[in-house]
Length: 119
Image (cartoon, rainbow, N blue to C red; front, side, top):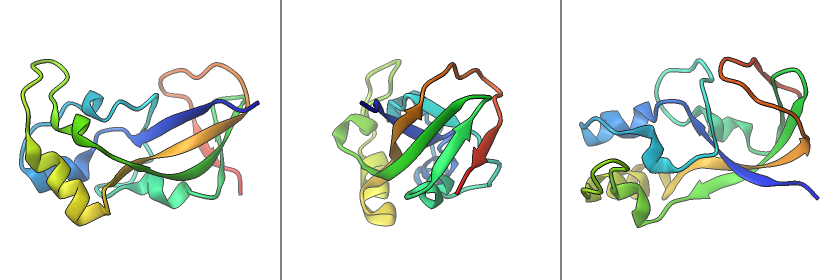
């Protein structure tokens, strides 16, 4: 049975720029952070419905965009709230940030592993 997890573009640049604040990427609570090499936006959205290889073995199927709740307003270090984060995600991105994926082929993922869209 596939394991579901959350993928998120590495730095959350789009939300950080829209909110005008430094945002720790951990507030989005992703299991895997990807550097897709695209500036701004949510490039992971383009992966919905596709299979992606990560590293030498892992293959995931990207299922859907990830709807977000109030938790993304909390700084993971200080627990201070910034309601503007959720407001911007809701208004500019339909309340979505990141994507859900299912593991099709298990393996070990390491920082710096190559990412390849398979279909």
